[in-house]
Image 1: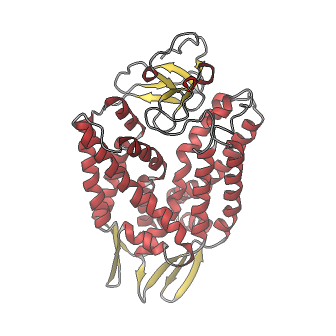
Image 2 (image 1 turned 60 degrees about the horizontal axis):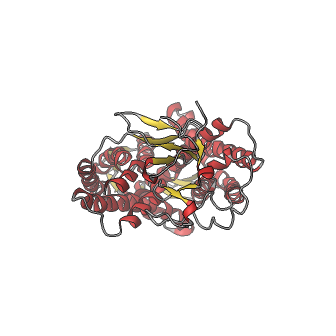
Image 3 (image 1 turned 180 degrees about the vertical axis):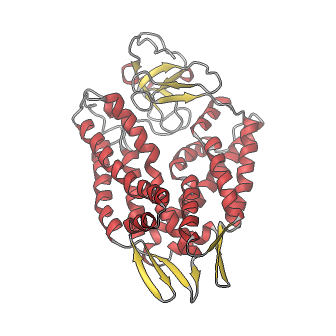
Length: 214
Length: 207
């Protein structure tokens, strides 16, 4: 089977607002169907991707070091971190819950850092290595990304519930802010990356001009 | 699904679909039930068969709206210990994060579990309500673009898993009673996958 034609060769461009195939040869800069601005590639995908990724990596340190919540039961208070929460379930014998929280709060961010780093590095070098697999990797990162918010939801619900004056209270701690920021920043990193770069052989000259906004 | 010839004249843009992951161009072909079209080059899904018509979609969106009211108005769960009890709604869990120096994360959480789903359902009901009559709603393009932007930030299914983890986390310490809000949340998060997914884009061609 012959290789499919490419949008760039045909003078077409995909509208990100509605999925319409727009004809760039007519000189349009906006989608004629939904009015979203058209651009063949996202603006500065590599630089923006790295910027969001590094910012997320920096916040990842306080997210894991600082406590995410404080439990006060019958006058005794204790802080707990993300890893501490996983260990607590593990030691209590609830390995299945420990595994879910481990995957969502430690595994997923780690996989995202490595995957996005790999995608950005290889796209920057216009590497031809494992293109199909890297494309699948990007879709995987897009799909699993927001499940890391699990920890934020758990802390918020638990803290909202356990407000029993005199018996016990649970309060959120700054660690959860940094953890949430890591999730949001890695989502931005994945959104600003353009998966079509994986398939580009040559850098697109003059791309930065018509790629304002996304 | 067959790749189009580069030399072939592509007259109508509606018949052409471009892979969002690698820019390959294909001619759109009708699909059978449960089928989806995948890109030959990168393996990404181009589009799926859409089993719902506009009326069915609107019915599900109205159902979603009712469930959304229940999910927000009733407590997700209640705890009790030594005669004291306390219950929390989704909004309570946002409020508890909004105190002190971590207010920003409360905004993210409010967007993810309250504002994004509410806006999605409201916009879908607005757009589909007019579409049933065969008309485009006022501000149709803006609504459709807003739905595209909101999709990644709507995280009800994560909230559902979070609520279940919270139940297990607390069950060892005190009595936990799941509330009506949790049941509504469970049904709603499944419903959202069907009604707020990418195939809402088909509406562009239908009205």
